[in-house]
Image 1 (cartoon, rainbow, N blue to C red):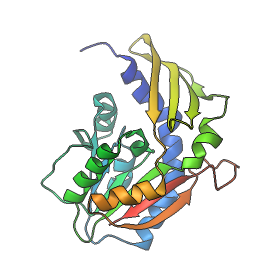
Image 2 (spheres, rainbow, N blue to C red):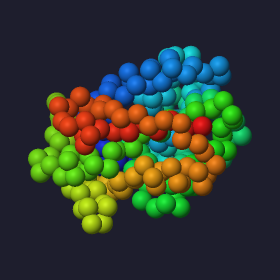
Image 3 (cartoon, one colour):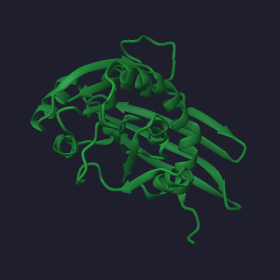
Image 4 (cartoon, helix red, strand yellow):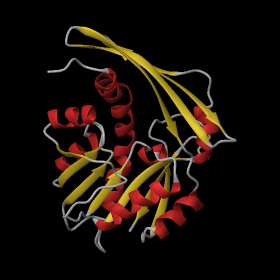
Length: 245
């Protein structure tokens, strides 16, 4: 047994401070998408599944659901919930099965910084789809980076035994968003510090359309939504859910 490291701590703090907040906001949209276009098949794949909240949701709705993520600490949290998960990079994975519904949420694809890498993700998804499959993924609205990530006050959350602070910045000239995440989590009798920086790229709708086409996928719809219920201009403070065949 190795001692917990910073990413072990962040995987738990993320779940408490961000993951559940986002999932509670996106769940009504997922349920609407399921109602509007119900799936005859019941196989689901969640890319960048993190701690497994989306896998658990689909499993509760009768799907044979599996998650995929590159973070072993995140996957350990998901396995603790009883989820079926795989360790893999979503830019380069191969599965023999096909899936009726594929998801990639929590703006995970905004962490992909290069066009070739995003095409690789889309191509891997294409290989596990059939003509009846749907791929649902969200991206941050490009305008939200200046409006939300540019706010000087950090996002702060915490309770007994853990604390999370996320200080965000956006460099429009470089199309680069940075989130400096700090905090701590009490684990196994020790206080583990968290200090890491995450980078994101603001993907525009024309770029996403072009890269989907390059991977052999077809964009069906784009739905604007705000999982956090913030009272901001809906044109700048939202995420975008892409519906793809």
